[in-house]
Image 1 (tube, rainbow, N blue to C red):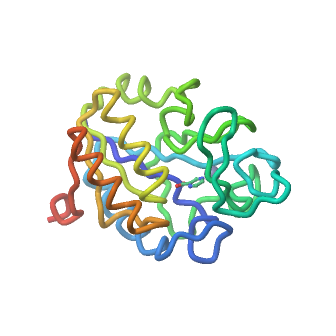
Image 2 (cartoon, helix red, strand yellow):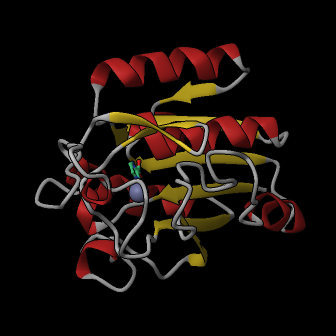
Length: 203
Ligand code: VGL
Ligand code: ZN
């Protein structure tokens, strides 16, 4: 069983959003077409409370993209984004959600960020995604979405650690930093992950 994970394809990560990922909108068509090649489709949704501690606005004197220590973890400070119930947290227009069987929300604890769809950044709390996928008989996990160097990367890394055969679809994602994405891909390869192009699935 192969599952497609649609990671954080949300308005705030599109070029007009609060935390824009360059060309983030360019992956929506692929997200729709790749679903037909999979046995199961699952989405994640970044879903922060209004005063999330990953927001630069919560830290006096700090700016977006500064890095701080947050309860012992290195934390990039972000512009306010994906606040629960706001239009920015909604899925991108044009993204086909009909085949999405479950949506896993993350980043809901105010004191800790959560890039991966499986765990928070401290690996303290599970979202239940790994058990859900195993319960559905999934062995292969295909990861795509936004942003390549953060939530897509950390989700793929945890998928590998959870024992799934893991494929990052590199043309179906876009990074915040191109350099960060190159490092992420090298790390995933080293951990036994696969980096593929959508043409190997779509023919
Ligand atoms: C993300 C930064 C902060 C992502 C989410 O979806 O990649 N990045 N929150
Ligand atoms: Zn976030």
